[in-house]
Length: 121
Image 1 (cartoon, rainbow, N blue to C red):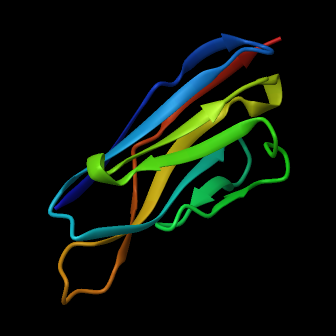
Image 2 (cartoon, rainbow, N blue to C red):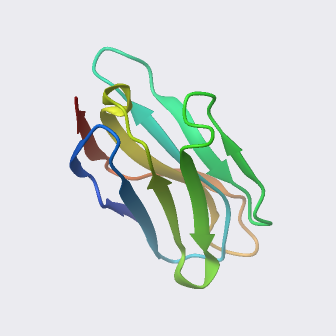
């Protein structure tokens, strides 16, 4: 069984910073792509950033230059450093990963439970 647990959300003023963490636990062979998504009320869930196991990162257009995704493979953990936050960044942030639990098994996609980020103006 694999679990993803996010931490680091909260309330911050516009222009401030937050750092989200996602820790994967359970039976893990490898974690391939790690990612962060977000969903604001009444909107679809969108990709914020992703990072491959070779360290190649990809960002959504609205966060490019402000957010940084990183990973610590030894800890099965990845992070989202969010700087210059804006009220429109307010959303529930979800971590996501493609994980293989055994060398003979295909990867599956897993989601965290979500953490609220609120940016006040």
